[in-house]
Image (cartoon, rainbow, N blue to C red; front, side, top):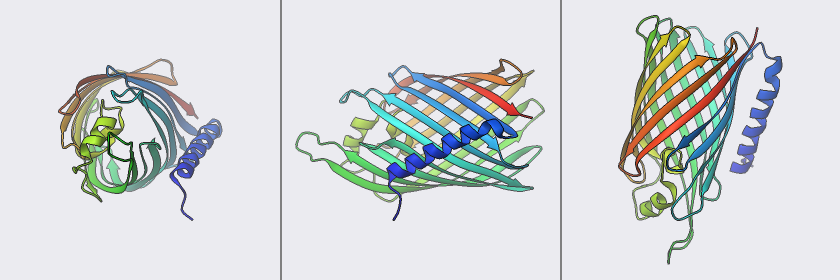
Length: 285
């Protein structure tokens, strides 16, 4: 009997909890947590961890929660839980992951990801694949009844990083999705009305394609990064672009703090500013 989305979510949460609980006895590990805010009243918090279980294998887990206020509803709360493994055999590696994401009363999904990559001292290149199993529950509006829409999406893309110099690196990525149903249909307006408001809302994950690029610069122990991205919504067909500036600096020998400021310009929800703050702790030998 297949697991329900609730059980998959619970499994991811338990695995994530075990991961963080076992971090104290791992040889090397990274723990992190932070929050995001935007000027459209969107809020999110996340906790994550990576634990080394061998010379070249890491297990990762994350838990998150976001809340977005909507015009027609008081708010939508979204949960996120993920588990993943990354193992590397010179010159190639493999990343596998599973995640639960969404609001079970409106839109949620179980996501499976896989990446095959190669890396060396100058950079890395990966082929990325993703399968997403969605369930959309549209509330009744006027004379329209409650509507349940199950569908899935398959994504394929490339990502890479290049070290231009000792202190400068570039990265590029792109992903395109193919959906099992025609999303831009008579239900599109109903979906957009209840899901769109900012990059933290549910609709921001339903994309047709996305491309991004960035440059990072090390200045002593500090790191500056600028990222730009562009994507197209799968339901609405609207184009959006964003730019984000990030700054990472040490607090102690084992902790870093990162701040980032982003701005979205969307044909769907207009301009939205985003602020993020994350704290990282590095443990082990």
